[in-house]
Figure (tube, one colour):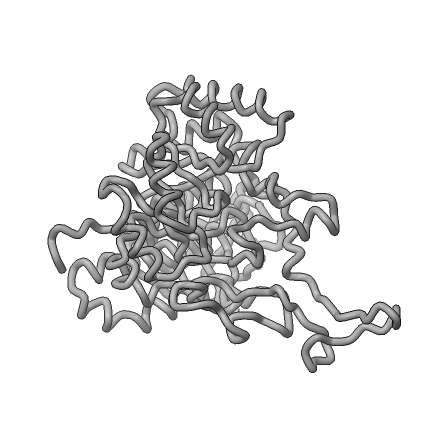
Length: 413
């Protein structure tokens, strides 16, 4: 490896305070989050202002960064609220976010006015497909541009060669793909009145569709020869963990993972796999090549719709779509994260039911995986429980092994 090539940032999603902390502990260099308003994941739990401060303080204590989304396509009615929102971020003082993510030029102008001390990253929603648009945003004061997902590896390299060296390129490398160009979708709004460009997407692209010929109403014809119909807009998930060298060579500064609606288990699983892959590559490219199977095996343990390389190596074809279902493949179930050690037992909030005697896997922030059997479960009063059937119940568990805070419990399905 050339010593003048800087290791790219690993950027993970944080849908709430728990997943932010998980991302930080499991290898993220930075986390992107949304407030209650003005981000494009209105159905995520998102952060109150107080939670945002807590999250930033936690991330900064580990030397990590936090970016806040404000990437809606704003209407007139939104502008006063956005101005107030940015003033609140400014009032965070030293707990201000490290950057805000913006797509709308009007919102950009307000951010430059209210929070000039906070870096601005231009969202993928702004359709950033060429180096002149990158230079345009850089000239206005943006530090980073998130590339459109429709760009090839070659196009990214061309952008890198034609923009200032200090300007950063952020690129999605893992997660759900949107059928619309750079996420500018109208399906959700048309079918349900919920606007994807205001953060309320219903994922209409994942629904089941048939073809109807207008002179024969009521005759629903499958678009593929499949008795179950066809999910014609249902893309596989992006996964670029086997192409770290190509991304680095193309000049990508930040590897972004999609998923602010995903669980902490998903964030931990994907974060530690990419952390391992990136670190191995920069330690020794041969080590990385030898580990590809291991990286893919690990990311496959997170919920997914199978994997594709998207547009990186040419336009996606039929093999990059899923035609027979719209559900995730789920290899593991999330049981909880250790948050307390009490009298030899490990406290956690139950996420899904499990029982005494079950075999579980425990993943750790350092990359280790421990296999264990549940020996004992107690409630908060110390009463013995054969199983824990109530989600979010506080329980204390003996796994028969020594664990630590932030170790995560999962069960193979």
